[in-house]
Amino acid sequence: MQGQVTIVTGGAKGIGRYIAHGFAREGAKVAIADIDTEPLERTRKELEGMTSKVLSGKVNVRNEDEVRTFFGQVANQLGQIDVLVNCAGLVPHFNWGVQKWAAIRDMDKSFWDSVIETNLGGTFHCTKHVIPFMEQRRSGHIVNLFGGGRDIGACAYVVSKEAIRTFTRMVADEVRESNICVVATAPEGAVATEDAPEEARKRLPGPESLGNRFILAAQAGMEFSGKLLTSKDGRLAVRTPGS
Image 1 (cartoon, helix red, strand yellow):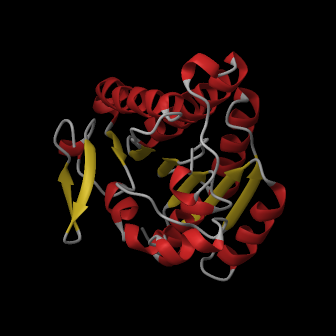
Image 2 (cartoon, helix red, strand yellow):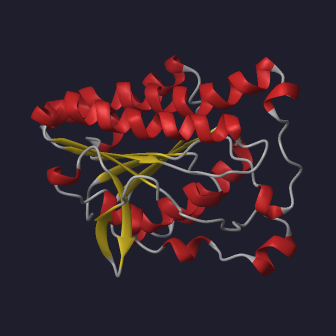
Image 3 (cartoon, one colour):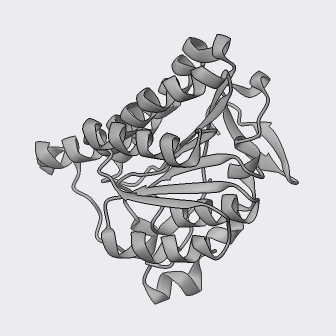
């Protein structure tokens, strides 16, 4: 990843922060986008001590104009965009002991919309506005985060992520001739990040348990494009349907 330019949305904290750190350690120039100003600034300072070029921006991925503007800034200031990791999203951290989201019969339409528009809509906005930069160079990787769950209250989240899985497959076909690889990958289990309650951090694995799967996904060959990937023994593998 030496010298490559990576954008990580939702990169200020949690799994996004872990992903951004991983790319920085590999020598990539890293741009992080997030809506939370304080952790965004803190993570930017962390990354500055790890890699040669860092850019951060307060971006709501639900706002297409903000996404378009930030991606243009990244390309202008860092020279290109090689990798996009669509990590920004609303996640029901039930395994942290956080209060569960409402079941569908009790859920406000505005809450449903916020989940779908952030997780799926944000992935759409960011993918849409990174493709032209990658097409110019006939090279690039787009890594989308997948996720699952069966808990009552997780319906909006799971629906958004299943849609992202289909989105990945369809967009991969659209951009294949431009040599842009589009894949999805997932944590495949609950992790407790730095903003989890102390009890959860003692009980659950941290983001380091995710290993280098995001780096591997950003290096995947075109034969993997459109696939849902996992990492086994430090190598890429395709997850089978239903897994």
